[in-house]
Length: 343
Image 1 (cartoon, rainbow, N blue to C red):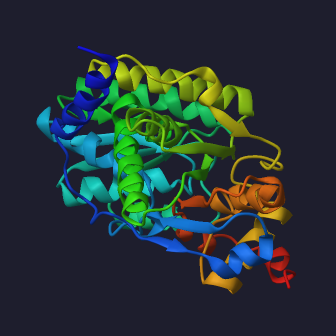
Image 2 (cartoon, helix red, strand yellow; image 1 turned 180 degrees about the horizontal axis):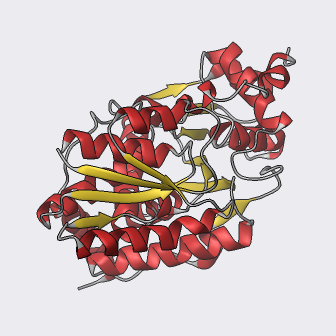
């Protein structure tokens, strides 16, 4: 079988994977002319994965369609996952568990907050069992997931552990399907090659999009802005996830290391901590296009884009809006003052 035949066959293998349909797809692809005019640079479009019609949206739902189907096929009765208290992934997974009549255990780093709000409020509303690790180290969630799964097995339960943020080989393949979805939308418009920009945290989304793009013949360039870890660490993680996902499908990994483009410098004080630049980007998007970015992911990623837009090539840009709006309703909204300063 030739390399071309392998890449054609991979879509058949991917489509054959069991999926528990949660979202109505495709999500809209909309032009953002006022926002584009303000920041300058090439024509700007937004891929509205925040409008995924499930669990307050967000691109994490794409991977969950495959993960939930796998859990049900294995006869599991409880999902176990984790991240931060305001995790979009945890909130979406809790919803998936609820609609599939499964139980859910959420392991969250740190200490319980003074009050439940945003995604944490929704996770509890959905009936999830919530535990905090007591450690500010985000990686403390990883052994907690393993321990909890083992404890449940010892009690005769059938847990389905999902890695922090849903970043695993099977979950990444859901995002490869998203790359094909965008390519179909773009081709239908008859437009020129494009650049896709997104935020990246755990790396599963980025790995899937890179694979999908490669299997399609690389119709676009996909690059990300890291919001949680150093750029080189994220790139290495994404490269490994892409390799694992390819192996899961039984095909060679098509990704070269230099294709993993990660931009740093916009994390600020840390993951989930709002920045002045990100807050300004949130205000700008809201008042030009009625788009609501969030202070953890999309606000920081768009802050990078706003700073870089004038120096980018003329090819159109699609900004992946990965969701996260529930985090706008957390705390006292300390970041809002910076957002309001935007003219």
